[in-house]
Amino acid sequence: LAKTTQPISMDSYEGQEVNITCSHNNIATNDYITWYQQFPSQGPRFIIQGYKTKVTNEVASLFIPADRKSSTLSLPRVSLSDTAVYYCLVGDIWGDDKIIFGKGTRLHILP
Amino acid sequence: DADVTQTPRNRITKTGKRIMLECSQTKGHDRMYWYRQDPGLGLRLIYYSFDVKDINKGEISDGYSVSRQAQAKFSLSLESAIPNQTALYFCATRSGGETEAFFGQGTRLTVV
Image (tube, rainbow over all chains, first blue to last red; front, side, top):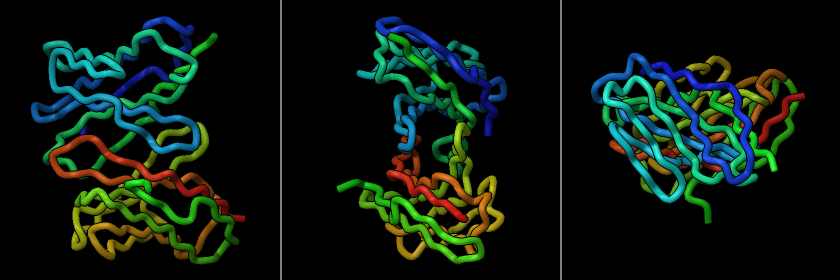
């Protein structure tokens, strides 16, 4: 399993775009990159997944450079309700049965 | 009804007692997981199961055991609860070939 590194915490203001970067230098060829969001006392919720280049859905965008050694989760125009912990995970969706979470990034949105 | 249901939602138990946390899912997924989360920390994997015949230890399995009674049911047991097992416990399910995992509402366990 590829190890991931992300900032422990970030602050931003309502209406801003927030970018959270995750480093995964030893990502393997078959690995996908997945991001989860967790609110206090709730289970994590899947946000987005990608393999390369850019993926966008109704919640976020995921940018993955050509070398795939990092990825950036982009949250457009955040609101107070985006205050949560965001986890970056890397793994082979076929070969890995385990899903290992790191400590995540605690995002705090200020009014 | 929730796709992944955990019971109980809250439990207070005494040191040394045996306790079972239950998880059931209606998503038809083959893979099921148990995690614990301590305040301010990420989730740590306790056990995971590929199917009813497959049980695997995770990062922190000592002091815990599991049972996969059916594809839809995965139980976590604390044989002799101790205070440092006080935590929030989550069950999750996933389908092979998909990275999206679905989590239950969590069980808040307090061992006194």
